[in-house]
Image 1 (cartoon, rainbow, N blue to C red):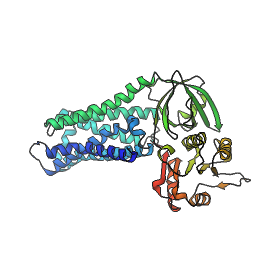
Image 2: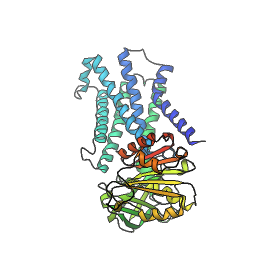
Image 3: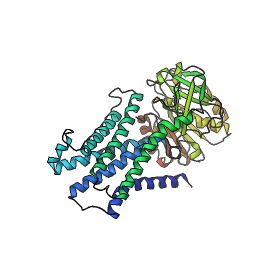
Length: 438
């Protein structure tokens, strides 16, 4: 079955789950209808809860999905679906208050029934999720702290929301409706148990150890790990994993990194990491021999997913590791396809893999175009930022037949999509991966 067909089937199942509560109300036995505004409020609450509950799926790192949908697709959906779910859930009580002002008294936990208090807690937990996610950087919340509270808020929100729905018990008096929500709740919480308990237990039997940590350029390091007592994992070039370094696999401190090594090399994994955050700032201090656990591989950002007569890679700074994995893999496979790499960096000295890329141009049908933001006076290559003009100047006339891979910061990806559109490259041929998920 084609990946596109599988995607549509998963999306169909997803929408069935979202609308199932309303479908059961429509086709199954139901209580006497009430005022329109009250029924509207309940409908929005049902869909909002289903929408928020299903957010446990994209965050569960299920390989059956993460190898089908790209990381950009997963997190783009997750962020926006959670926001829509939040709006729907918030609309549920606001509509009640608007058309029945006396119901505001339900906000008082001292006098309100437990079912109302559970509903209030669920809304507050959802507000906590949204505020800490949208404003994490402005609030200076460390990534590990945010992940911990994100999970706690999510579990509290779903559990108290379900207690609220069960307490009201108007539509859940139907065995079919009650059964649906029971199954959904068990599945959602089961995903958390799998992610936080069962998967780490499995990882204990497949550890890795650090065999090398080498500097690439200023503030950029390559971490090399090898399987310790097992055969390691198999991946396709461009995929990423979550690394747990010098901690047990149950630790909250886990970070996603793209694999930089060739998919044809099975005895080790390489990751090129820039010093950019609380964790990565000390990546160069990781000792040789340190224990590492790996969750993956994940992602569909890969040449193996999209066959083409040639490939165009566009990388910005430390967005180069997944692209290097693809180029190295093509070299190991003896590919003769035409390849272009547009590589943006601040200065010549900050170009990672510089010497290797020069050598690969002799091995592959590869053209590397370095674009420097702050070049030296004797620099004869492209300068500034990668633009439509630079792309147009170096790409061949059959550019529309190529598949494009872009990896880098969010602003750069947006600029590259605009530039490719300007030179009339069909965006259906363009695939992206960004490095700013939260």
